[in-house]
Structures are given as C-alpha cells and as structure tokens.
Image 1 (cartoon, one colour):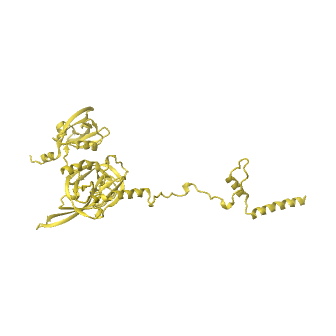
Image 2: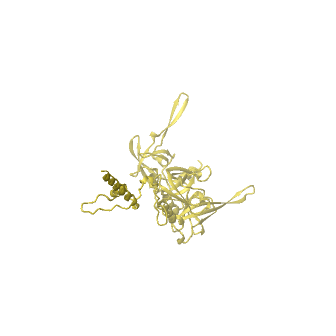
Length: 409
C-alpha cells in the first residue's frame, strides 16, 4: 500500500514539473479556451494560442483621454480650414484707405495737415468701394490701396450721413478688383461665427474672428444721428477697422464694421457693424443719385412686440402725424401739491401691416418704406383700442423735411 501511495505522489510531482518546465499554466489554458470559444460538433479541437500572443486588455474609452481632432491633408482642423478658406476667398477684396486733410490753426492760421486710416471693401468690377462716411468725411485726398500694393486716388460717389455709409470709386484694372459678394443679415442669430477683416493700426488685411454677441442694437454716430438694427460682435476691432467688412463662414459680407465700445480706445470685445441689408438698400441709390432719396413717414421710433410695431415717437407735423397716427400719451396726475407725469403706451397705435403686408420687425417696415418714393401713398394697418383700422399715409422727402425744419420761422 505504501508502495502505491509513493508511486501516485511521484506521478503527480512529475506532472507538475513537466507543466512548469514547459511554461504552461492551467489558468492560461482556461483563458485560451475562453478566447477560442467552444468547438462546434465535428470540428477538430483548436490549440490554445501561446501566452506571448495574448492580446493586451483595452481600457474603456473614458480612460483613454480626449481623442485628437481630425485633420485634413494640410494638417488643419475643420475649424482652421474654414478660417483659412474664408480669408483666401475675401482678403483680396479688402482695401486700405488713407486720408489727408488740412485745416487752419493758431493765431496766424497756419495750415496743419492730418492723416487718417480706415478700411473698405470692393463691391463690383467698376471700382466701387464701400466704407464708412466718418472714414473719409472732410478729407481733401483719399487714397485706396489694393491687395497688390498699388494705390489709387479715390473719387467720392455718394454718402448717406444718416447711416454713416459712403461709396468711393477708383480707376483700377478690372483684374486687380476682387469684389466681395453681399450676404443677408436678416437671418443672423446670436452665436454665429463671424470674421472681421480690415487694417487695424495700418496693418493691412488683418483677420480676427468671434461671434455675434447681440442683434438690433442702436448706435449713435456723428451729428447725434442714430443707426438702428446694429450687429454687436466680440471679434477684435480696433482703430483702422472702420469701414471694413464683417464676413460670415460662407465668405459673404453680412455687415460693415463701424465702431467699438471701449474706455481705452482699443478693442474691449464689444464691436458694432452696420447690417448688410441696410447697405443693400442704400448703396444702389448712392451709385445712381449720389444720395439717398429717402421717403419720410414721420415715425421716429417704434417698439418691437410680439403683435407688431408699437409707435413710440411721431414727428410733429410729419406725414404720420398729419395722417392721424398716435404715439404714447403723457398723463398728468396730481397728488396733493405735486404733479406727476407718466407715459401711457396703451394709447399708442400698433402697426401690424403696410399695404396688406404683415410686418413684425422694424427692419421689415423700414425696408418696405424705403423701397418707395417721396409722394407715394402707403396704407398702414393698425390696431387702436383693440380695433383694426386702415390709415393712408402720403410719404414725404427726408431732405425736404430737414430743410423745412432748418428754415427760420
């Protein structure tokens, strides 16, 4: 009996020695069988893979860290590719504008010269250049420098002081002119990516990028004039950017960079641009007539509401006032010895349509009115005291109204 027990122990020890001498491990064999899966009926048994071929364990994606962004053939990310494509498409249409003016100063009225810089955009092959009026206003000489470094003296074509828009013309070869197409600012949304291209501090065709921060701002320009429907952006805009184009990701002009809000005079992340839909209405008249033949309806301000446009201010003796339109009413209340005055907006007319066209925004309303001529009649659909009414208004002429107001009485 002891002999058989000793033989059994010897056999077990011998098997274990052989197993470890060949590098095998029962657990490894079980793991290999699990990897191979069960054999199908009739299929010969499959040998387990050597331990050296065991696949390394793969960590969950959350433990691998952020994946690298995809790159194109030039090694650009999709966002960089858009930036490069936009710049390559439009930068040749951006111009550098320099101005020179003289004025008399001092006791002996000595002639002093001053220079200014700004930006602009080529808008057609005829050599028309779009810019701000304040860039070229009062200048004795205006020079426009194209992308190729050639400079040309510019001739004023027309200006719209109300909206701070000016059009120049240069006599340059057609092959040197690269017009930038005009887009549509009526579909802009806060958060859309934009590009500002211009000449800040004289650095030609510099591009900065950002987003639309807000819409429908009001901006006061020279002479206490107010431009409405302004686009607010956070792209860096500095002195010299005025008049340059604001571009969308499709390479179209959606605005004209005009001003910044800053305590230092340099970019603070708050820039303003005139919407291109306003430019579209003004530029054709400047090219054709040298000025905007603007019809006057006599409504200075409106409030945009969900129901329509609430009349805020009516020009005294203007077309709307003559037609009987009403703005808010001032109500005086006396409390003891004190008299208080409040504004009752419920008394104002609510404009919901013009010539059977519904209107929801001030831009829609002004766009339609400015498509008319002075002397034409439009019919406003209003709501007054919850009653729907039709009010005909004969449009006046902005210039004539201004000249009449300036005459001594």
